Length: 426
Image (tube, rainbow, N blue to C red; front, top):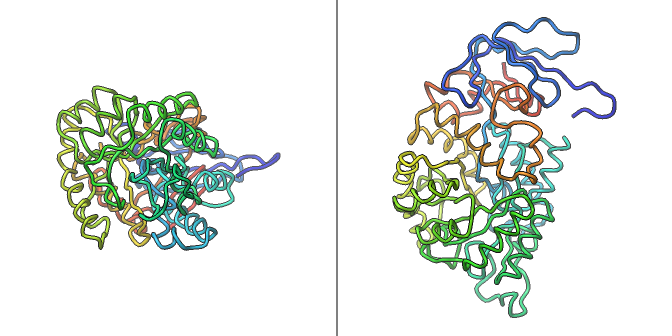
């Protein structure tokens, strides 16, 4: 980062094939000039020699694309396991999260939307240049009803409504249990006060949770509408964890903007998401993405995964605005699967459409944060004049072979974020 009267650094990447994040075709023999954190020129002819101090990289005709994005991460949840959440030192939780943020950036993910965890302070440190990591759209704590998907209290704990204490995951701002309209309003406003760019509610059962079958409906229509109103009043939106047709219908009726997951939806429900103009933020789950020794949770995971292919088919058929994410949680060893799951998107979309979703497509969802989007001064997910200077130089052509993005260590030879080179193995 530049401070005081320092001139912003200029970075010039010459002789590259540019995939801009929105077009079907690439631009060959291009030069891309960055000044500070922004792109200032994308030229099909060589940019004239510049003054001393410009950092130049010869792209050798390789494939330049926008940085990848992930619309559903849990940075803190990805970096720590359940025992670390429940018993580990708080400082270690944040240290592990910061370390994982850097690893995620080195996998080529320059922007992520965090869907549960106290990541607003880490976002601030990254944005200030104290640590390396992706741009973060934080949701702060996942908001859940008692016995809902984000209720991590023990079964013998007394709910707060009856005088009990918050659970450990509430103490560290990973979750917030709130029942009834007044408490839901307070929980939403609490996350916004802490720096959330959007709000995450859990409206149905999940594989990782202990008490809730997948079929459960969580939160009443009045509670959901209250959350949507509070978020809208603050210039942003609500995203909801939900899988089933009944849960999705309730969410849409209440004005929810983003359906997270949706793997158990039927055709009519997917069509309804599109008709409502809402987003489907889903994941190309395979059964081995998560490991559940508990047979009940393992069975829920299997049921969810079996819905993946059909939901993608209907989403394409009905033109539903679809975002891509991972939702890896509480298994740090699985964090590198993020790259493989990005490449797996090619099983459901053409390579070019997959790359668009991983770049400009996800960025369009992130823009729903409106006033809470701290990056709104520039465009994300594209290579264009005025956009944020986040990009990857790939050794190979992902438009021909999307699997290349599944091995970033070998195939991402240069990674740039904010106009700074964070990796250069040329």
